[in-house]
Length: 432
Ligand code: NAD
Image 1 (cartoon, protein in one colour):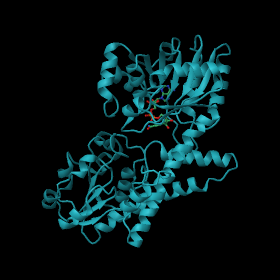
Image 2 (cartoon, protein in one colour):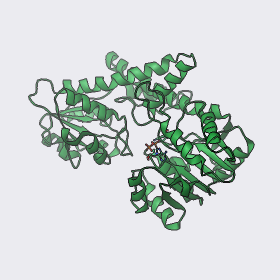
Image 3 (tube, protein in one colour):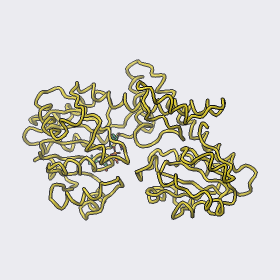
Image 4 (cartoon, helix red, strand yellow):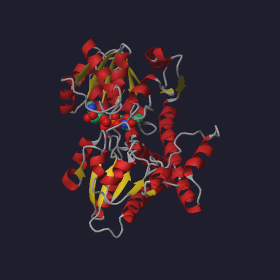
């Protein structure tokens, strides 16, 4: 199948590479000239485990091409996938649709023959109708269907999740659009759940899922606060809860709050959509407020750990919003560091993959280290903010010689509390 993907970000690029690997002819279109130039030169523009090898393989085979031109990328396509950003509107916090509307308008005049236009971006309910209207106005003779094909990949596992999705949700109003998508996903027919629903239902499923997960994180964080106050241990509590199949054992890790390019913006967009429809979503609203407070709470906790120390040095392990990615969008680590900077504290940071992204955010406001031992040298406290596997292996003995004060605030519960205490550290985890 000939597929064009508009937007080569964290969703568009792995999706393009994945469909190319399955034997489709894929053209990735992006308006960012520098990104497309880099990709054309064979330089991958983001980090995702396993993506780079597949990218090179499919560029070499000719299945994967890049362009900035809709004129070049759209006419031959059987399927056009829109994967542009839908960031929060600066004022209302609803999903800002300017990139979606621009993409739909720009592609319209180049449609040729029957084409299915699938929205993979997370978009408010009714966007499919809007795209349909926009395209018909711009190109009244175009033969097309607009469908919703929400994306559920997890950053850090994008390649895995492309080939082994939990589910594929397709929202369409026309049989022939469903048929094209069935053909596209034929290689997945026996290995995953495919659900064909109304377009508006598919658009809602994405927001309903993300809001639910955000609420689950907020809930376990509140439960962690309760455990701290009551003397229980959240790790044991979460384990016990997770054995109930109705609850499940995922997303029960307390931490510094949820972040990333999805949960924060999608919860705000869900809340806005609900208000527009005259519905109050008190749980979603509570998660939004609680999550904001959470990051402030964590910054306070780190500040308290160095109270009374003159000109303390804070060592931060982890900048990305989660492990496995270089993405720092809405990362709790970034917000916590900003708060610590407001307090006038000195910060040195290290992340295995997100140093470049972090340099663009902080410039010379903080210092950077090359590894996890360099970062803790002469530190008065170590704050662990991202759950990278390698941080679990921190050699506590070696660290104890490097740090000025043996002080750890572990916002991800990565380290063994008993071991840390046995090594003489003042250790504070979450909810235990
Ligand atoms: P991103 O910012 O990484 O990438 C978006 C890309 O679209 C950018 O490269 C940008 O230059 C390009 N673009 C914008 N307007 C364009 C236009 N008119 N023509 C061509 N290119 C254009 O965004 P992302 O993280 O890939 O997210 C994309 C969408 O997918 C969002 O709606 C997001 O909510 C949703 N989503 C993201 C994830 C995730 O984990 N990142 C997961 C599921 C769904």
